[in-house]
Image (cartoon, rainbow, N blue to C red; front, side):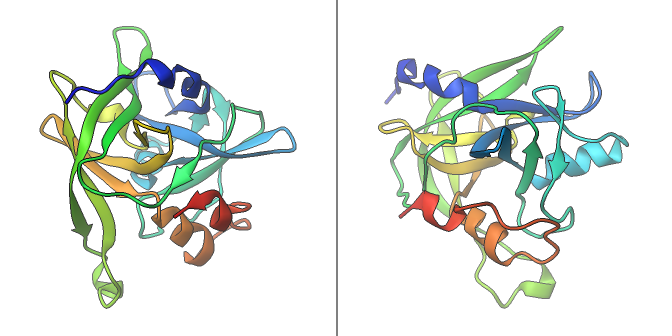
Length: 215
């Protein structure tokens, strides 16, 4: 069933481009906290790693950003701080199930610019992503296959994109990778793991991250 994206336009101001050099690697991020004229955003760790490989520091919406989480943390998420307000924090919810209609909002590369576009689909099934050998005794990471509707397609810049429940605009997950026309999204539940327990944090955990995620 096709989903409607008309009501999601108000969310666009909280979703931003992560990039370094023009024409280089890029991804998507979204706002989870705003305080004292600064914003904290979430993207994928591998997006930051690609920028580091290019020898450039990350920028969010063209503004230099500071990485708050360890670059070598195992979970494929990263938190950046940006010294400007970048829209309202998005609502997060860790309760998902197969069949929920969803919308991923991410950036596509164009001829001269990047364009934020919605891709509609459904959570088609739960998957488990294995941890590294060093922590293999712990449960794997909870994730979901995304089945895309119609001619939609998740592209390279969708890494870090929020995956919304199309019915209430709560963020359920973060796009990790494309897979055919669809992809795989990590459950937003693992943002709690990153903020609360990941080793190597260079700053305090995300403020209120344990309470902003609704179960």
